[in-house]
Length: 504
Ligand code: GLU
Image (cartoon, rainbow, N blue to C red; front, side, top):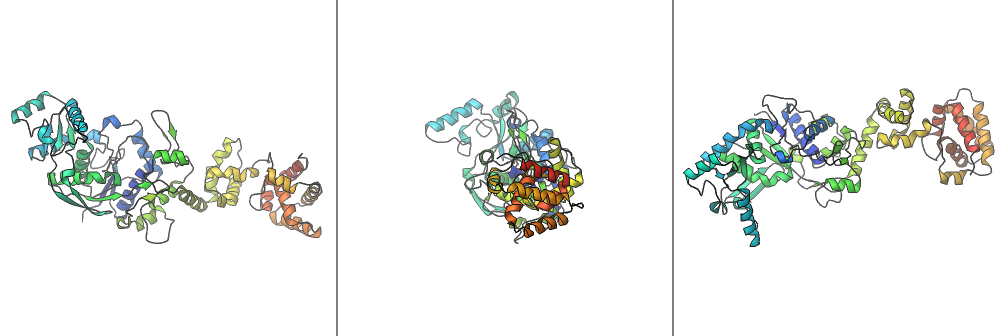
């Protein structure tokens, strides 16, 4: 059996949309599962759309997600180069070969002539399509004499090679996701394959020639390329090459399921649609999943289940497990709704799987930003107490600031509820009890405070909430005795005193 080889072939036209990462992920999983090769090819033949920094962004995003490619731009490999602009010299001969075989032709129509043809059609309420009907009245090697064709080819440089689509054929194709796809070739246009002006191929020619030369066995790409499939199949046939197998992945849909997920949806609904932060050439910055605090493992897990399922109830998959379970036959045909709450849920699950020490290392820079530099061991202990409640490391401060600094304010509602004429006596007593405890362990303080509440026949809720308000500044957080053990006796007594002096 042939070695499985797949490629992720983005065009560096801006930030990679999250759907692109999903395409890369499915390629990666398929390659790993089949012990094949995963290749990164940069399709940059459309120089007008090339954007500075976009290629590096793609490489960085793949790396962040853990999608290591075996061959590609930067890494190299036996089919180098992997950047199409560097393969420029390869394509012309293939375009010429198709012309020689009668499968393509030279088109000499100038932009003005094409505009005129377009306008003429529009005036009749039609759209101009350079197809089998139009080609016979345009300036090309099918309508001009061989001598004139030769002359124009040598004397002008705005000509192109166009593919000659076969007419009136019902073309039947197999897609691994959609099944049989049938198209009447008369509906297709004669796409440009190669242009003299910049000596560059268009996407269609470069994509096919490279997939052939790089021995790609499976093309896994987004559904937006499905309309190009008939043309691609025809081009493979014209060359006499066996096409690879195709799998077109369904679109990622807006959260409400109505239409394709776009960058604007992210802005509108407040979530990222790019893996990493991206600053456009206009200077506009869009946050990425990384900057929004997502763990790459969580994002990968979330994306894997958008459009694929393992056939089981299991939702949490490590990369290795995804590789093990991945199957192109289980890709879902319908679009996948992008539910950001599900992404958050995954992040939360991965947060819980991290060790307290790992989380402490992630939390430390945030604390440093606030001018704090507590010992890592202490931060790790705090992380252990709060991680169940957080979805992101950026939630940590709100959930744990009282472990690191004395509350400056008290929650209004709780103050009204728990601070009254008896509060001073209660707080005084608690302070007295705590002062006498030498081993300030949570067991000791808990035992002493509860014994006192019982002996005084006080209401536990009332007393504990007041005590909590003094320590935390709000009625939230983990076990209060845990907290005071961590902040220590001195700080505990200081906080009790502080709320006693608080003027309502
Ligand atoms: N360059 C195309 C893109 O930007 C690749 C499509 C394909 O995978 O064939 O998505």
